[in-house]
Image 1 (cartoon, one colour):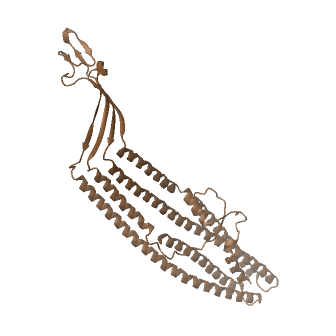
Image 2 (image 1 turned 60 degrees about the vertical axis):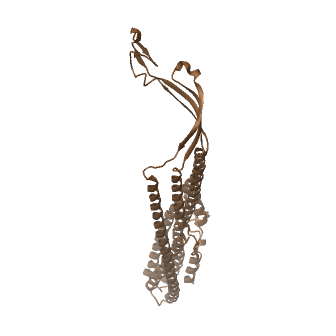
Image 3 (image 1 turned 30 degrees about the vertical axis):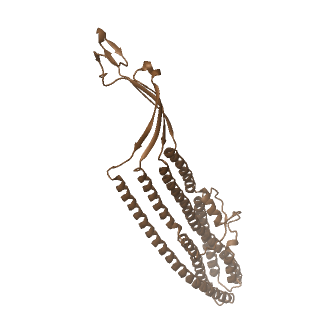
Length: 432
């Protein structure tokens, strides 16, 4: 029976290759998600940031706990124009004189210093440990960002994939309708030759065939566009048409005890506290050991006599700096309140979204049941009309009117299923 063939065609939509033999490859939703995650520059950036944090920690460890060796030096020249002994001469580095033009040699004289200095921090371990703790927090933040980005890609890729599936279903639907219209046209042509129906009725079927061809062409173009967008999203350069595996998303029934969306705010708070802890450490005593070795002299012609060395300790302890410590604590407290505010807002929005999507899913299921009932009723009416047409008791116009209503109901059903899939994807995104 014709109507039964419609349901058979719709049932096998996902298994049909409809695009003129151009599709030789089948891809799944998992393939596109994995490809998008592999090609994501943002995910690669996050991995690079982890390496950067590791290298920065090693640099700070060297700064706070390792010794530093430096080569330092300076030279000062004090030239004068001397008129001593009745002679005017230029001296490029004078150390004494009575009648001259130039700096007061009693206050300024040339000198040269050059030495190797070795400095070892003695109290840097506390600062290094605090920095290491913050680095670990930052790495956790990066790992969480990677986790969130992968989840985000799963969601947006699934959305685009569902749109592509909708186009394919419409193409398959148009093909199944085209087959039935061709069969109806053939049967109607035989009836017209026997004088049981009018030629105008046959023309109406031909018009419906053209309308169905236009629907298929539009659906194919939409599929090409949505597939191109999916490829761009996933970083795929291939532009050939492919077969997409059907999917049936189901809502995740139970949310995790600790939502991953909330984890970001916990890590932000830890990072703020770690920054404050490092800031506090600058108010602790700082003690360094140093050793210098080289030469220092005010006369360039006697440098070899003035080689030597020195050693000692440098000590620093900030006692007052205009209450900067207090202001920093106020800033940190304000940041923590801001983080808590954003966390509460997202938590409320997350729960509202979940309840909204569950209510909409329930409404979609009710509409699905109604549309399925309508489709069965239309199928029964069309079967009865078909018998009446073959008996010459009904005009093809009445049949086509019901036929169009049946097609529109089928389209509404497909659109409803697509929207339900999108809604499930959105619910699973937030219920995570």
